[in-house]
Length: 482
Image (tube, rainbow, N blue to C red; front, side, top):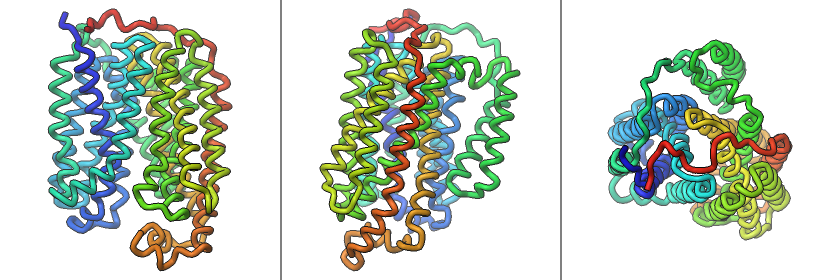
């Protein structure tokens, strides 16, 4: 059997992760130029929403495919799809074509993170896995922050099309490295078919709920999503090979981890989306300074993840899950208390560092616990389930917190005034104490809700079992590595 070269494989996985993370943020910088070129400003929001929806709803499906047909073919298919979507996005001649191409990109991105993390679970011991996932978290965070900077440079030099086309060589490199370096054991022929009816129902249910959370026909979409979710559960109970095996999902460790991830994903939006807005609009920071307020989170996260991986074999999963959740509450609680006019940027950064440490502890322990609680042939769907819950929480949180923000502002501060406050060239015209105080009043409830969501995640985490290990802590013996 061919030998897997772990370093080359990890490099290929990091390239795919960086590609999807970069694309999630790089496009926002290019969009004003894209609108000027293609028009269609009324469909502006759907350029990002199409990508987010497609990547989120496809995660559980790719997890199941990875278990049935193998990690490498599933991941390579996702990268190919993402690369084709990138090619089509750059070549788009209308806003509708761009939205469709972004959906194709998102369908490819849905494979990248869950399957990449499943491969890490196959190749590395429990002690090694945390350090590798800390590296993944660092690359994800750095790529996300670098996105707007890279996007601005590309648009100013070679044109907005290359915001998408830059993925083509990266995708090709990832595929070549995976094909040459990563070798799975030969799998027996699959005798069961994919539960496509369940996959379709889950997809439609997720889309309906996410669209409703974005305040698009919520009176219709959210009830429709609930009905489709019930239908999905009925289908899964009868399916021969369900997309989300209910017996697996309802295991105590996986169910608690998924529920906590859902709440933590929503809470994360309070920090990632609104702390930069507070720094720039209320405190008068520049755009780079505002973006840098969340950077300490991306320092604390991998540090805590590496620390967690060193102790899991001695203390188990429950302690870091709960301790991490407590630290998250402290970080977001401090943010809720500090977010007042006149607070220093370093105070916000300190809170974000603490928050990042908490997320590094609890989410690393969660994903490793989920992977260690199942057999190898269930690891793909178990990993994807946890990441799907976190992604759904983030998407739902973004929509719900946006509604909280709009309601908190009310008629006191029109959207046009907020836009002027964020423009460094026009800020001086309106940056009065009263206006900044009004914006701060609209943002304070956001941080309070984020802290409450974190408290909810802590309450759920208290039900985490003492030890969920079912699989060995060593790398898969079926995979030969060097």
